[in-house]
Image (cartoon, rainbow, N blue to C red):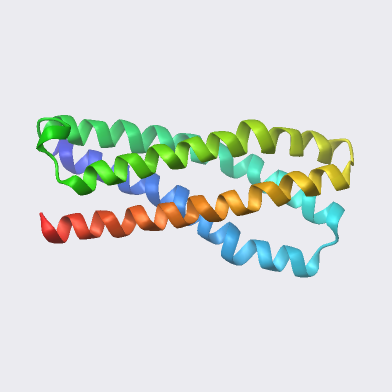
Length: 153
């Protein structure tokens, strides 16, 4: 029962984080770029990130808490399929990229939007965008690794 709850928490964390990135990158970004002028677009992204990033922090806690609990329940990393090691490594890389986005790029971007420094905010958003694409790709790769691990375990 506990394993089922932990796996559910793990999946929810992944769906929120990866699904949120997919929606933002593949649906919201192209529409915002096509329909909004830079001040409105940058204010929109500051608001969207401000709402989404707390959910990412919650997802990270859920993913690592539930993931490590699941690994511990089967005897540790020595007892798990190599795919679990790959998922863990990719997850750690995703968190490092996210921390860079949040602490180094987003916080100054948000301050620049508040100060109506549109060129500075635009430059920060321009640096955030490709990193979200990388994290989205890594997140989708984790889903594939998880599925392959289930198939071959």
